[in-house]
Length: 176
Image 1 (cartoon, rainbow, N blue to C red):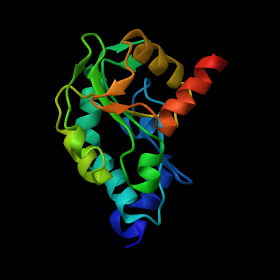
Image 2: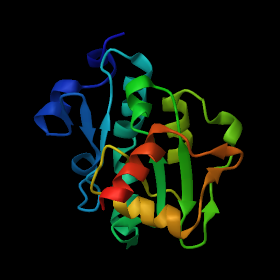
Image 3: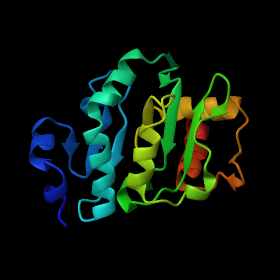
Image 4: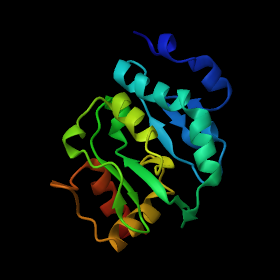
């Protein structure tokens, strides 16, 4: 199935929401504190379905974004997804937390390798989750690193952070 059969790609491009192989979450959600871009492979049905899940829930996400508080530009409830997620359609790393209290609101670690669009659908149903951040957003990463370091998070349940996201975070930490 082609991406155009699942998503109205032409309309998304016209509105600057999709550029090349990226979907720009900030433009789609109409909010200044999300510059996050998510890469997706138009030839991968699972990846396009994941994008559709976000697009279909646009109004719900906008409502959450408008009312959410931020700390250092990061929404209080956030989900971090590895940038390979939407490209491959597989979930590589997930952390959903309220970083004031380090409360993990989605803790089914056995589902970490679920189909991406199904996982995003579940994430969007979590009331405490206000945003999805990907490591494609370089501007966010230093703040995300600070939050993770301040909480001394080294693993998610039994899963130690060893994904591409964590590698990128470590490299960027040296740079910043």
